[in-house]
Length: 282
Ligand code: AMP
Image 1 (cartoon, rainbow, N blue to C red):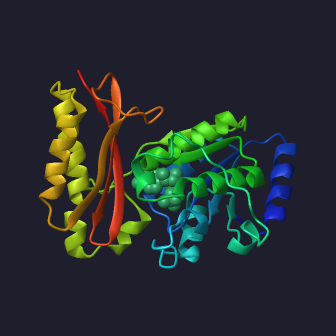
Image 2: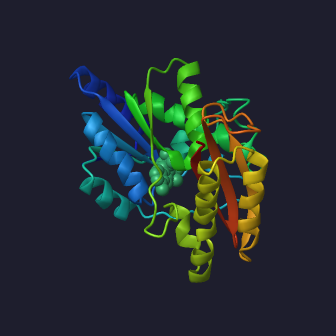
């Protein structure tokens, strides 16, 4: 496995790979890899000739009071896991190279970033869209792999890639969970034992909503009320939002027609967790 940290070198390698007629699959991550990330790498390995994993904790997607400084990092462990997953290139650029002092451009996808997570994380999705656009321009992938875990991010990236005619196929893969249902996340490491148990309320709330929808409940207000009540019954949990929206464009839904996205953001102690599911009615 090759490790590259210079942007120009990565661009050069991408050109060489394409010249050989090979395809590139990119898995963008912030590192501290877990099975959720590895599932994206395995799919990229299956579908493309050269798998590139980027590891970059992107400073511009963190708010001033968020966890950028303490975000977990372990590049040596990540290199080992990526190698075992059949990754060809790890791209691990320095923040000062990604954002030199003269840097100005921001990618914005309005309409999709003023709902769900955006209210509590202003500027977050501009930061995400900007770094992913930069990574696309550096790595020149044919395919790029994202997790449904970050449902809003996936919708925004798909819109950006289509609107800007990037010609990159965006794949969105299912949420990988711990045995008890907690969605895997690099941030789970922040949870104390007691918080780890409390964090299950997200999964339990999603399951409750799925059951209600399958039993024929279509009123989104009714379902979110039940979800909110379940989360509020957990003393360590503080609900940020529980919202049901259209999975394609994130528009608000009053009643569920076909499929709907239920997205949750909950603080467990000081750790902010997100999770979601697709609700299907009969
Ligand atoms: P992150 O390192 O948290 O920025 O995540 C990098 C990519 O992995 C994103 O596309 C995430 O949606 C995806 N991802 C994170 N957690 C999971 C999970 N539990 N299951 C599937 N994909 C995930």
